[in-house]
Picture 1 (cartoon, rainbow, N blue to C red):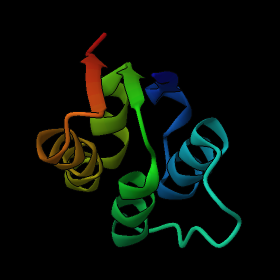
Picture 2: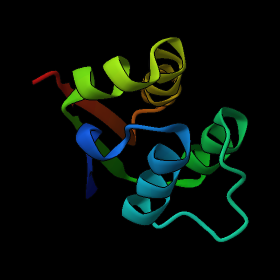
Picture 3: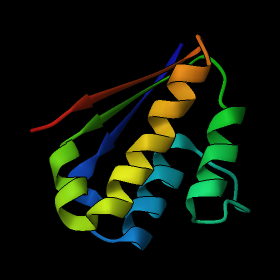
Picture 4: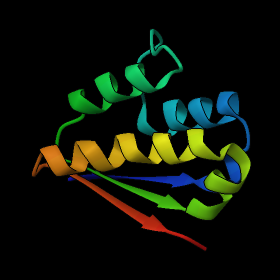
Amino acid sequence: MKEYTLDGRRMDTRAAAFLHIKQELGLPEYFGNNLDALADCLSELRAASVILRYTNAVINALGVYGQKMIGVFEMEAAARQDFIFRQNKS
């Protein structure tokens, strides 16, 4: 299983968050920088473990949108056994 680590401190704007996710997860160039595109691309990752560090930084910076973004990862993990999502709040 491939492990990816996201740093919530680098996700202080929507644009920065999507850029960080795209770079760290190796998402394709056509990635659309929105929640629907994120869900689509996550569904294509196989045998993946994603760790989000500093979850609170994402929520503090992006508010409800940050919570929705985290929710996309959580929904993908709930739907599949080969996708794991973990968070570190501090």
